[in-house]
Length: 328
Figure 1 (spheres, rainbow, N blue to C red):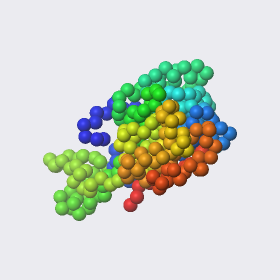
Figure 2: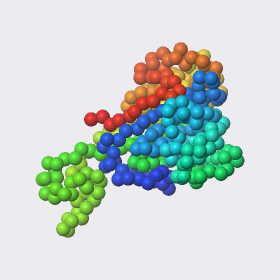
Figure 3: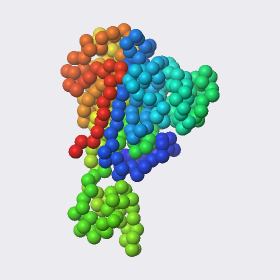
Figure 4: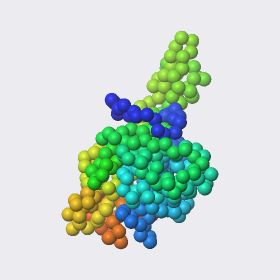
């Protein structure tokens, strides 16, 4: 959390001991669909699955998301949190199918859904054809320029972007503690039985002395971060949020630079504009473009427009996956 941040009411799962318990953690990312506006025979609508410690976050849920997940070999039952960027049909119309699929899989745990103002109304309307579910649904509506949510040990930053309607991008970050320092523990005469508890983030009082984790832990090490953003014009908030992302998934509605006026009119982006955001952010390791226009059957044809600006640009296909793991 940045200094001065005020967390909103907690909407994630029960938190553990934060960064102290995830030394071997990883984020599994799957881009279920890469299409914008409408699905094609070889392209589902944009949706991203993030899995961590047996739980899942789904960002956006366009038509056919449950089929895309099946094709990717992923179960939707472990999804505990759905993040909606905005309320256009190509980003929410898969909700009834998602909910019914979860119910048919025997899900009984609560499902949380977060998105811009109006999310509760839209979800309730879509539930008309999925009224009897074996699990509870709760919604959280985002209203500020920046919002912060928690999910397990992960910190989620929702940031407002620029589209025809209120729209948010999301960064999911997993912090990492520093290395345990046994030399410091010995020098401070900390009893050996307390070492593992301090390493897990526990503050301990014993024999009139207070022992804190910072007494035995080195400085925090780089964690993991994935940023997702679609349906927007380039704005500084995007590059600021994407800074140091291991994976930046960004809309590339149009590849051809001749589509600039169309992008301006519809408040979308060119490949080159997305690449410039990645370059401006600093520290981005890889860029995946998504939300391709149905008028662009072969996005690979325009890849060079982005690679000239940001070399680590990739044009993914539906179901493409990557595992982000801590580096030693």
